[in-house]
Length: 179
Image 1 (cartoon, rainbow, N blue to C red):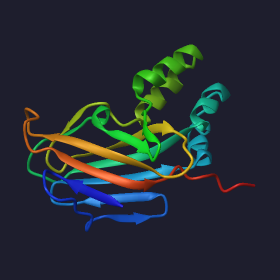
Image 2: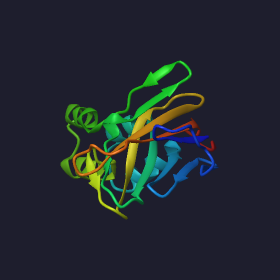
Image 3: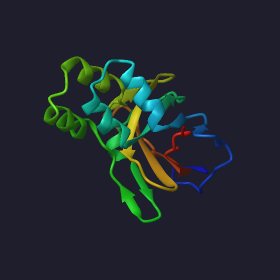
Image 4: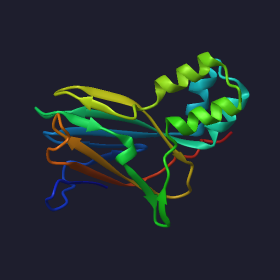
């Protein structure tokens, strides 16, 4: 279920969900989240020559390919640090760029692989202009069972417009298909 709140009652009428993908779109914003299996994620990075040490760290995480589109006539701010994630047991932390950088530094990961990985992540802060979109991965702990995300977007050039809040429930980190 996806809900949008902007200081008004919650509305889920524009929500769509298919296996592994959750979408929301209205006249202000579009949001699509696609949960990837470990096998999908590992195949992507393995095909780009990542060393086994990096692949092991990647395999243990849940990757959400995320696309945000500004459908409004105003600036919409993409800032994943303002997003919240959780399960029925409480909030879970997102692995941000600084966390990943520390992992790669500790592993002495090759610089080309670090650059490629960084390119695949959702930016930490971006002002989306009208009709502009951005995509990339958000990374979370691989949890059993459903989790939720509250995506918060400031609006306006000075970030002082009406906030957009989209809550997506019943997300899941899909399991691999098996042998």
